Length: 326
Ligand code: BDR
Ligand code: CA
Image (cartoon, rainbow, N blue to C red; front, side):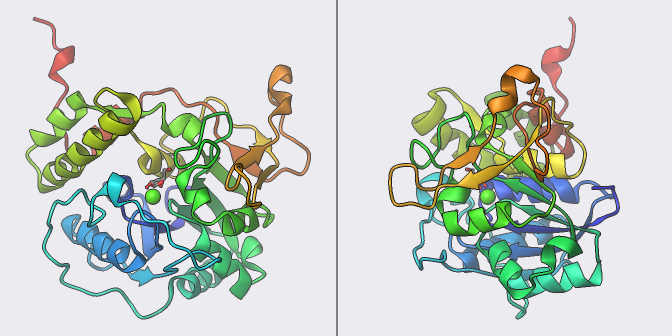
């Protein structure tokens, strides 16, 4: 996206969603027009409330927030309190937000903003893709109206994080993900292959804790919970993946992927063990990954691994003293 293209974030706020929103709100050139909430890390209503809390913290109570899908297209709901805490924000117990979400449903808001900004709107989807797929059903011209879609989701060569094959956002609604990835618009897909390699550490947490701003302190509080979970369940050491913030930074043009071929991507919607897996055609890997004819999905397969420092700096983390020479 060009810096001033209008942006809509669709999310299931969630710890890393909150960090992603704060990252975007820290850039005066990002024109965030609306946030739509979906079930996922927490229920859709709580995700919307958490979004309102984050917007208030960042001094942006003017940005509209809409509630969207409360379950996937099969009517099932998978939530992740074991990862994001009972309130979606690591049990931080923030006060209730001052405002309520708007009454316009999320999918309708997506369609309206796309119509009002033809060819310009950038949609950053960092939760299950149910809202976006519903918007596609409401407005079949949506792929022509939207400028670009960036998605955090999927696992190409990396194992899944909910099942051996499936990443959470795709796992939560494989039918919706398949529809969005096949819709014929320009998509950048940011899968676990890269988000698991951009990690926040104990040192980043310390920098946030001592950063001195309300945003840095809040980021440190929620990151503490995330580090505990990732240490316990994933890495065995104090590191946490930067899923949604990395997708936000790629959408904003702050991180340039090292490797991101345009290839066809499909989703397994069967009921076997591969349900929710993202199947990207990466057979070009031995020929330097040429873009495939007609493919509209750019799959980010490599970034340089340095994003977490920039995230912490943007969120008001203290300077990294470890680089000082005696
Ligand atoms: C994705 O799932 C959610 O838990 C995170 O917020 C992120 O969007 C990672 O698989
Ligand atoms: Ca998310």
